[in-house]
Length: 83
Image (cartoon, helix red, strand yellow):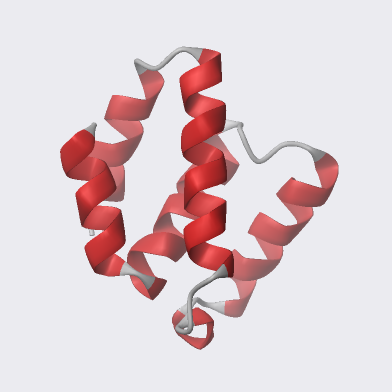
């Protein structure tokens, strides 16, 4: 999926909108039945960023978006189109 396009759109968002989007992506990922498709290293980086409160930072938000694009490509595509 187009994570680069997603990140371009995210950079234009206000902090509140970015936080809301991060929560939406996290909800999609955690409810996915396809988590085994996400590479382990990406999953661990997302997990650690969440625990450290850094998931909203661009580097980790990109990892989260990448994980969602793999686990739930149709849902990720709808989010990108909405942005």
